[in-house]
Image (tube, rainbow, N blue to C red):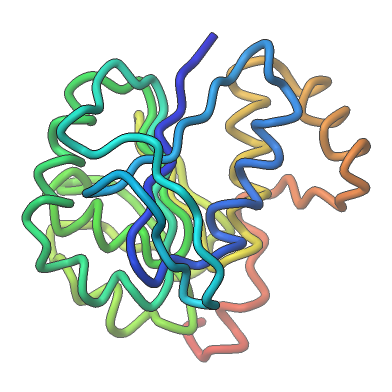
Amino acid sequence: MRRIAAVLFPGFELLDLYGPLEMFGMQREDFAITLVAESAGPVASGAGPQSLAELAFEDCSGFDIVLVPGGPGTRREIDNQAMLDFLLKANAEAEIMASVCTGAVLLARSGLLDGHRATTNKAAWAWASSSSEAVSWQAKARWVQDGPYWTSSGVAAGIDMTLALIAALHGDKRAEDIATYAEYDWHRDADWDPFAAVHGLV
Protein backbone atom coordinates (compact mmCIF):
# COMPACT_ATOMS: atom_id res chain seq x y z
CA MET A 1 0.00 0.00 0.00
CA ARG A 2 1.38 3.38 -1.05
CA ARG A 3 0.07 6.57 0.56
CA ILE A 4 -0.57 9.46 -1.82
CA ALA A 5 -0.58 13.11 -0.76
CA ALA A 6 -2.62 15.05 -3.31
CA VAL A 7 -1.79 18.72 -2.92
CA LEU A 8 -4.47 21.41 -2.96
CA PHE A 9 -4.01 25.17 -3.21
CA PRO A 10 -6.37 27.99 -4.20
CA GLY A 11 -6.75 27.98 -7.96
CA PHE A 12 -5.66 24.40 -8.66
CA GLU A 13 -6.77 22.79 -11.93
CA LEU A 14 -9.50 20.20 -11.38
CA LEU A 15 -8.49 17.64 -14.02
CA ASP A 16 -4.80 18.00 -13.12
CA LEU A 17 -5.69 16.55 -9.75
CA TYR A 18 -8.74 14.37 -10.25
CA GLY A 19 -7.70 12.78 -13.54
CA PRO A 20 -4.70 11.11 -11.89
CA LEU A 21 -6.62 10.43 -8.67
CA GLU A 22 -9.31 8.58 -10.60
CA MET A 23 -6.62 6.28 -12.01
CA PHE A 24 -5.05 5.69 -8.60
CA GLY A 25 -8.44 5.36 -6.94
CA MET A 26 -9.40 2.37 -9.07
CA GLN A 27 -6.74 0.41 -7.17
CA ARG A 28 -7.68 1.08 -3.57
CA GLU A 29 -5.87 -2.02 -2.39
CA ASP A 30 -2.61 -0.44 -3.57
CA PHE A 31 -3.10 3.32 -3.15
CA ALA A 32 -4.55 5.37 -0.30
CA ILE A 33 -5.28 8.99 -1.21
CA THR A 34 -5.25 11.97 1.17
CA LEU A 35 -5.95 15.56 0.14
CA VAL A 36 -3.53 17.98 1.81
CA ALA A 37 -3.10 21.75 1.82
CA GLU A 38 -1.43 24.53 3.76
CA SER A 39 -4.47 24.50 6.06
CA ALA A 40 -7.07 21.77 6.47
CA GLY A 41 -10.50 22.62 5.13
CA PRO A 42 -12.12 23.65 1.84
CA VAL A 43 -9.89 24.85 -1.01
CA ALA A 44 -11.37 26.43 -4.14
CA SER A 45 -10.22 25.21 -7.53
CA GLY A 46 -9.54 27.54 -10.45
CA ALA A 47 -12.94 26.55 -11.85
CA GLY A 48 -14.70 27.31 -8.59
CA PRO A 49 -15.70 24.00 -6.94
CA GLN A 50 -14.03 23.36 -3.62
CA SER A 51 -12.25 20.28 -2.37
CA LEU A 52 -11.73 19.42 1.28
CA ALA A 53 -8.14 19.15 2.49
CA GLU A 54 -8.03 16.48 5.18
CA LEU A 55 -4.61 17.40 6.52
CA ALA A 56 -2.56 20.57 6.84
CA PHE A 57 1.04 20.53 5.63
CA GLU A 58 2.32 20.64 9.20
CA ASP A 59 0.46 17.40 9.98
CA CYS A 60 1.68 15.50 6.90
CA SER A 61 4.28 12.77 7.05
CA GLY A 62 4.98 9.31 5.71
CA PHE A 63 3.63 9.73 2.18
CA ASP A 64 5.05 7.56 -0.59
CA ILE A 65 3.77 9.58 -3.54
CA VAL A 66 3.17 13.32 -3.71
CA LEU A 67 0.98 14.65 -6.54
CA VAL A 68 1.14 18.38 -7.34
CA PRO A 69 -1.40 19.80 -9.82
CA GLY A 70 -1.05 23.00 -11.79
CA GLY A 71 -3.58 25.70 -12.46
CA PRO A 72 -3.76 29.50 -12.25
CA GLY A 73 -2.98 29.34 -8.54
CA THR A 74 0.60 28.22 -9.21
CA ARG A 75 1.48 31.81 -10.07
CA ARG A 76 0.85 32.72 -6.46
CA GLU A 77 2.15 29.51 -4.90
CA ILE A 78 5.66 29.95 -6.37
CA ASP A 79 6.18 32.60 -3.69
CA ASN A 80 4.48 30.65 -0.90
CA GLN A 81 7.28 29.46 1.35
CA ALA A 82 4.93 27.12 3.21
CA MET A 83 4.26 25.27 -0.04
CA LEU A 84 7.94 25.07 -1.01
CA ASP A 85 8.94 23.93 2.48
CA PHE A 86 6.28 21.21 2.39
CA LEU A 87 7.55 19.89 -0.93
CA LEU A 88 11.10 19.74 0.38
CA LYS A 89 9.96 17.93 3.52
CA ALA A 90 7.77 15.51 1.56
CA ASN A 91 10.56 14.80 -0.90
CA ALA A 92 12.79 13.57 1.93
CA GLU A 93 10.29 10.79 2.65
CA ALA A 94 8.55 10.10 -0.65
CA GLU A 95 9.36 7.47 -3.23
CA ILE A 96 7.84 9.54 -6.05
CA MET A 97 7.22 13.26 -6.55
CA ALA A 98 4.82 13.86 -9.44
CA SER A 99 3.41 17.01 -11.00
CA VAL A 100 0.87 17.81 -13.67
CA CYS A 101 0.92 20.90 -15.87
CA THR A 102 2.39 23.97 -14.14
CA GLY A 103 2.70 22.01 -10.91
CA ALA A 104 6.23 21.37 -12.20
CA VAL A 105 6.99 25.02 -11.51
CA LEU A 106 6.45 24.42 -7.81
CA LEU A 107 8.84 21.48 -7.84
CA ALA A 108 11.32 23.59 -9.80
CA ARG A 109 11.09 26.59 -7.48
CA SER A 110 11.69 24.34 -4.49
CA GLY A 111 14.93 23.19 -6.14
CA LEU A 112 13.86 19.56 -6.41
CA LEU A 113 14.21 19.48 -10.18
CA ASP A 114 17.69 21.00 -10.28
CA GLY A 115 19.79 18.95 -12.70
CA HIS A 116 16.77 16.91 -13.80
CA ARG A 117 14.72 16.71 -16.98
CA ALA A 118 11.12 17.88 -16.71
CA THR A 119 8.19 19.12 -18.76
CA THR A 120 5.12 21.25 -18.18
CA ASN A 121 2.10 22.80 -19.88
CA LYS A 122 3.01 23.95 -23.40
CA ALA A 123 0.49 26.80 -23.34
CA ALA A 124 2.33 28.23 -20.32
CA TRP A 125 5.80 27.20 -21.51
CA ALA A 126 7.53 30.59 -21.52
CA TRP A 127 6.50 31.41 -17.96
CA ALA A 128 6.89 27.92 -16.56
CA SER A 129 10.25 27.09 -18.10
CA SER A 130 11.66 30.43 -16.93
CA SER A 131 11.03 29.43 -13.32
CA SER A 132 14.42 27.72 -13.06
CA GLU A 133 17.45 27.61 -15.34
CA ALA A 134 18.74 24.62 -13.35
CA VAL A 135 16.08 22.36 -14.87
CA SER A 136 16.50 20.67 -18.25
CA TRP A 137 13.07 21.55 -19.63
CA GLN A 138 11.81 19.22 -22.36
CA ALA A 139 9.68 21.13 -24.85
CA LYS A 140 8.34 18.05 -26.65
CA ALA A 141 7.15 15.47 -24.13
CA ARG A 142 3.80 14.16 -22.92
CA TRP A 143 5.52 13.35 -19.65
CA VAL A 144 9.03 12.93 -18.31
CA GLN A 145 10.41 10.61 -15.66
CA ASP A 146 13.82 11.42 -14.24
CA GLY A 147 14.60 9.37 -11.16
CA PRO A 148 11.85 9.86 -8.56
CA TYR A 149 10.46 12.90 -10.39
CA TRP A 150 7.56 12.54 -12.79
CA THR A 151 6.29 15.65 -14.59
CA SER A 152 3.62 15.90 -17.26
CA SER A 153 2.44 18.34 -19.86
CA GLY A 154 -0.89 20.11 -19.49
CA VAL A 155 -4.06 18.92 -17.80
CA ALA A 156 -5.15 15.64 -19.47
CA ALA A 157 -1.50 14.61 -19.91
CA GLY A 158 -1.46 13.87 -16.20
CA ILE A 159 -3.70 10.85 -16.79
CA ASP A 160 -1.24 9.36 -19.28
CA MET A 161 1.62 10.00 -16.87
CA THR A 162 -0.26 8.38 -14.00
CA LEU A 163 -1.02 5.25 -15.99
CA ALA A 164 2.67 5.04 -16.92
CA LEU A 165 3.57 5.45 -13.26
CA ILE A 166 1.15 2.69 -12.26
CA ALA A 167 2.63 0.48 -15.00
CA ALA A 168 6.12 1.13 -13.62
CA LEU A 169 4.98 0.10 -10.13
CA HIS A 170 2.57 -2.74 -10.92
CA GLY A 171 3.09 -3.75 -14.55
CA ASP A 172 1.56 -2.83 -17.88
CA LYS A 173 -1.44 -5.15 -17.44
CA ARG A 174 -2.60 -3.27 -14.36
CA ALA A 175 -2.44 0.08 -16.13
CA GLU A 176 -4.15 -1.35 -19.22
CA ASP A 177 -6.99 -2.70 -17.12
CA ILE A 178 -7.48 0.67 -15.43
CA ALA A 179 -7.52 2.51 -18.77
CA THR A 180 -10.03 0.00 -20.16
CA TYR A 181 -12.31 0.31 -17.15
CA ALA A 182 -12.19 4.10 -17.44
CA GLU A 183 -12.79 3.85 -21.22
CA TYR A 184 -9.71 6.02 -21.61
CA ASP A 185 -7.46 5.99 -24.70
CA TRP A 186 -4.06 5.81 -22.99
CA HIS A 187 -1.21 7.50 -24.89
CA ARG A 188 1.70 5.31 -23.85
CA ASP A 189 4.47 7.14 -25.69
CA ALA A 190 6.06 9.73 -23.40
CA ASP A 191 7.35 11.58 -26.48
CA TRP A 192 3.90 11.89 -28.08
CA ASP A 193 3.23 15.62 -27.85
CA PRO A 194 1.26 17.32 -30.66
CA PHE A 195 0.72 20.35 -28.44
CA ALA A 196 4.39 21.33 -28.55
CA ALA A 197 3.87 22.06 -32.26
CA VAL A 198 0.51 23.75 -31.65
CA HIS A 199 2.27 26.23 -29.37
CA GLY A 200 5.26 26.70 -31.66
CA LEU A 201 7.84 24.99 -29.44
CA VAL A 202 9.16 22.59 -32.10
